[in-house]
Length: 275
Image (cartoon, rainbow, N blue to C red; front, side):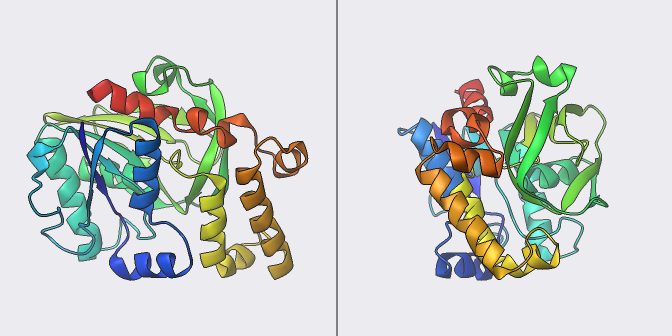
């Protein structure tokens, strides 16, 4: 099985992440995929940075599927770093490939197929997407086979899908974003997307908090730098020790977030659907 994982961030942002000890989005996705499917052949594409975004010797048509992960960009910006990714999504779908998207990936998929994305008037959904509920269509969808009808998942996003293209189906929603998951047929391909990040563990979220700590404070999520540091430490600790009841209770997270097999079930189901 050969998969192409798209890195949604440009190199300057990835350099900041690496300098801060945080894995890139594509790196985190690759790690989640290879944990479940160690024999998979994974290649990273960088359309935010250049047109010739695939590794040498790899063609889009060689892949069994494409995955789009997260990004700090905004899909409604008329920026080549954005438009190249929209074009790459369309090329993948036009080639008949199945595509999976998380967060930014969902937003790219929606816009590439004719929908719209805007800033969420409720503000940022960050840390954990709470009470994501499957729709009737979602409960019957293969991406959610074995998933609870209501669950939490790691997340960090400011924007949300506001309009869907003809033929799209909403698979999951919560109070923050009506479109938390979607299935979109397009051309010869098919797109499955989720607004949250099943590929992230809470240690990765903690690393993002370190990079964007000022945003967390300005947004009122945490009172001060001491509270931010305490919260980051607890997220790192609960990732290392998921059986710690005190941390699970205080952070309000459980098996659907802490158990990688449960958290990443959508990724597993998508890969198994294309094998």
